[in-house]
Length: 225
Image 1 (cartoon, rainbow, N blue to C red):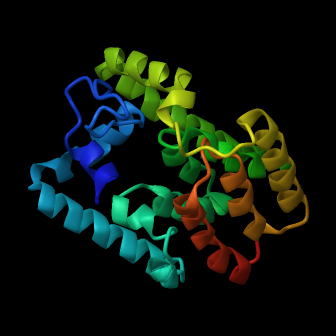
Image 2 (image 1 turned 60 degrees about the vertical axis):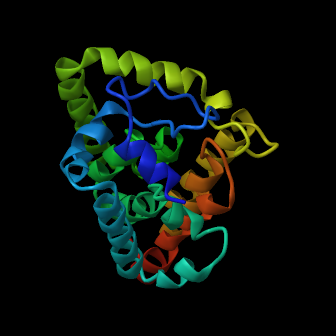
């Protein structure tokens, strides 16, 4: 069941050699993510999945959203070993610290739309932190393995087929402007708890596991900006 975790663990040397739908898990994120979790790949796959699952549970407890583990569909993010739970953590941290958007921009790129919060609030310092850290991590990775980045860019350009079966009937060209409007509204009215809804709306594909990002709502609602 941990198909996404398998993609992170069993990816080929070129990262992007596996094609979605051909019976093997496909790695879909930037090379930076692979480099950062490389120490965990020293474990057996069972050990990797155990640690990865534990991190999800710890994250949801910190977010005060542990109840989502019992919600069918939404809990598939944890079962599959995806990173939506960690995006929720990044949203909470990203409201105050722009640098927290870097991991999102290097994995679930469209979900990084949440960084617009700082732009709408004219918080140039935090916006600069987010952009600079993203660029810095990407730059180091490109210097180490430039060939891997061409593979990721190709995967992004073929996103319609990469995420086949997971998208909504409303295309990104419609949803992204709506997501931007919602996040700008949230920023200008101090309604940080609306940002997770904007992030979901701007996601590459919307399916039940996407709503795990709403795990950010409890903390954002209880801690005004």
